[in-house]
Length: 390
Image (tube, rainbow, N blue to C red; front, side):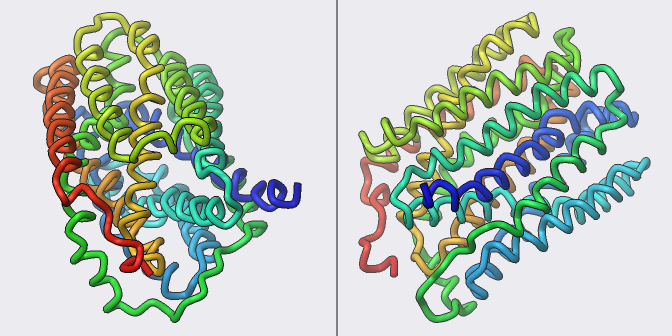
């Protein structure tokens, strides 16, 4: 009972942050469209977040490892989230939206990675499944997508800031109750980061997953616009996210029963194949209701892929650099992929439509899955010996 109680603040942090993140992922493209931006310009704005994350996530990850705290770095980021978002949503011109967006995203993007890094460490300490903790983020995301979608459909997308600040403030209140991570080692030095940037299996793996994560991030950016293109509303967009993330929460919640059955790379490959199938099916539909029906695949794609990839990366990186390594992984998964997915995806969406965009995403995921199979059967597919991880 004491173990479960000590995890309550962490679970509530994941719930509230991912609930706020829903507002950005699900509805920001529609808000920017309301502001008068076209698909290409929306792609530029959405690419700022991933670009900022490439710098912010390794930076805050290094600070976390150096000062041996996740809690206080999270506090700084959440304060930045609240101030940055308040200013961001006041901007009206493309240039001001992009510039203020960079500041906002600089503080916002590391929060998910730091929360998951802390969850992974706490799970290891208490010998519980990481997925049973992380599922609370998915529950928050699913709940918010359904509720906020209905609220915005009734009051208007222009009031997006209010639900966002509600969940952001909730995260701020919870972070003070967190139990911080304990690391028994000398303070990490900048030179220690060399252990990550010279880790060939880690770097090759990050390069290969880009083929799959680019499609995932493009979907994050444009599924709302695609549903609207097919004739759907804000409420339908919220419902689509709810269905998808509800299945993701189930995958995380029951990870303890299925995840240890095979090597993480096997699950990554399976999820990659399902990603490809999912995008090809999306490309073929002509009714927004079909998108919602297919959203159950979100849990079987992102849920499995993310959990397995996060676990595999944890095996690859030295234990004293866990936060740094996790945030480099996040910078690739959500940063680099997000830039390419938003910029290229926005251009394709504007010029050729959503169907063409999703067909391209399916093709890219198929290539990535094939390359990951090759990676798994080669020596680079094996994690470094445990003796080198300390």
